[in-house]
Figure (cartoon, rainbow, N blue to C red):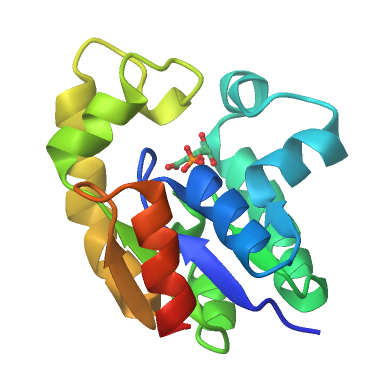
Length: 166
Ligand code: S3P
């Protein structure tokens, strides 16, 4: 079994919304790895970050993502930082991976002052988001087989485009 497609991209790119709608359009199931992490651990992501730290979160994420890629045959939506793991990137090379692209300005507008995302919490979310994108953009690009901009299009148009591209 292998996912039909895997969605990657930064926070605010629309992975959850597009994932849900794309799965619906294709009559497939969506597996969101952030949701799977919270379900399996019985904890929120914010709680794991604040009590155990980011490296501990990344370890859990790596394991859950590997399980999802090996066993889910619908759409898989990954947390924005999943591509930081070299072993996850190696696994992704065998899959159809959609990079949902978004500008820094729009990504920030959508995530807002959302403290549920620990990596953007703090006094200067803009600087954090910019730095995060500088580091991750090449990683998202390296795993992507399809790239779609989500900032100036409605979710319905993005999904329509993906249905015809995939
Ligand atoms: C993270 C993004 C979050 C979540 C965690 C870390 C990141 O998922 O996995 O807070 O490093 O970018 P979303 O991309 O769905 O917000």
